[in-house]
Amino acid sequence: MGVRTRTRAENRKEAKKNVAFAKLNNCPTSPRKMRLIADLIRGKRVELALHILKNNAKQPSERLRKLLLSAIANWQIKNEGLRIEDSDLIVKEVFVDSGRQLKRLLTAPQGRAHRIRKRSNHVTILLDSRNKPEVEAEETEEVEESKK
Image (cartoon, rainbow, N blue to C red):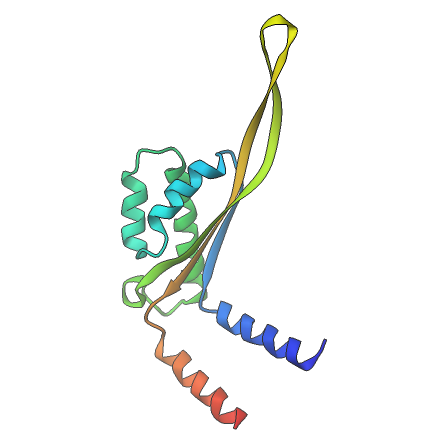
């Protein structure tokens, strides 16, 4: 591995230390339906996103709510000394990608068959805090000084 590649990889790794994420694979909902709900919470504060998902009548909102709670728990594990209220957590990104498709046949008139595609999706939620802890700011200043 080259020096530039290694430094870029280390920089990416440092940036991901503050970001908590959770993934849901092969959720048996079509990606189109899940994206409608994901668009509602993208960029919102975590508390507001939880209220939106709790009060939404659509079926994928309950799965997305559980995934958001899992992402919050992952953030708490990474940042043990901090409170959620003080850090001002936001839903930074929400990805909804298509998963595998189950292909089924439905009988049709006159000996024919229609194909049914039961779609699934993969959802990823990234959380980030608007207020960065003061400890990290001091560490970045030390790193910049050591580079000089």
